[in-house]
Length: 221
Length: 247
Image (cartoon, rainbow over all chains, first blue to last red; front, side, top):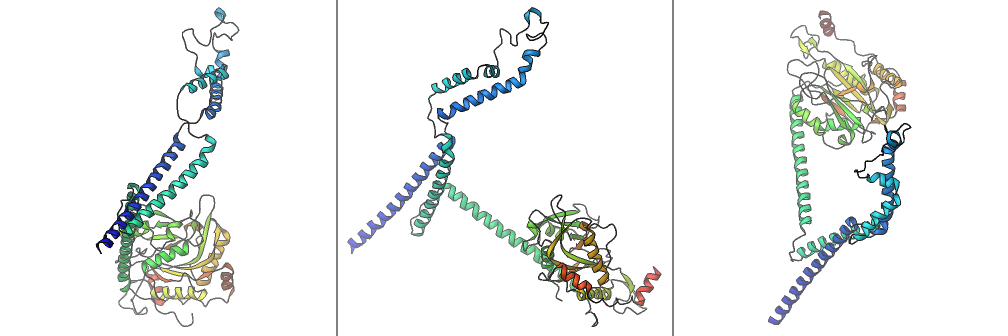
């Protein structure tokens, strides 16, 4: 008999350990999926994606600078583009002044893009997946994460039903608490509304009962 | 006829008045006395009036405000889309008269009373025309409503709708619409509030009858209008005529 009891105890202990182990595995899987999702959402792009972006940004910056300042180059008072300029005309920038980045982008876009790309090449970083692959990847990871969280929550509930108490994840506890509070608030509101309507009905009925009742209409009508 | 409870009456009236309207449409609720400070118009989105509860804003008014409030007959649609007419109605005006409360012809014991007999007869005339969907008694004005099976898209000055309402009014002996009346100004008195023109202890507007199942098509209304004319309204009682002459 003692042997049987020991065996049952060992089996129960093993079952509890297995259940806890499986839930721990599920939680590890949830953690992994969350990390992957964060990486897919926030990690920097690979250089192959950055290169065309640099070229496009340089082109836009140059075009913007030209649209804002281009005309001054040729029309400024006493500037090099005027007909009667003194001393051969004034340059757009003084000797001690740095050339604006927009002017460089407009004048030498390829060189500026190459400069920037060379800078990026020298920065060590771990790139994430290419931009084109990210939407599908993020969607898949979100789906898998939601599924894993659901399975884990159900597993913890099942374990609790079987007598193995394992605490839910903090976010599950918070969500369930919020849901319960919302449900309770709604029930309270309904009860309050019902009570207020009932009070109005009663008062109205009391007021009307003291009043004249409409006579039955004449038979001819 | 069994009068519905106040909450049932308000919810039922709102359901009649919001029938067929979209979620972005609104039913207007307007105050008709400057006695209290505060809002004089409450816009009830149709989405909130379709539940089985009195809308929260209106419930607060019923608890706190005693001015007469009216519910707009026509549903207001978003700008540029006009109105939606979910029901047609007839408005019977009444004034208090000086006479004996229970014996109209008695020369003694006169006091200012509402003409209950005439009010009852007006309701009977409306019922004889077509069984009503709702009747609201605000003492100074009784409103009979016939809900439409499909709400009619209209606008503020729709001549055809005005003509229809005036024909119904002529048929049942009710008041015709004023020449300058706008269709968005037509109202059904909201049950539960004090009546207009009340003196002494104010009486409450109340719904005498409500039947949400009764809905009529325009053809049915036309057929009823085309039927044999109604008998002439009961002549004015002598006591009432005397009171009027004295005034």
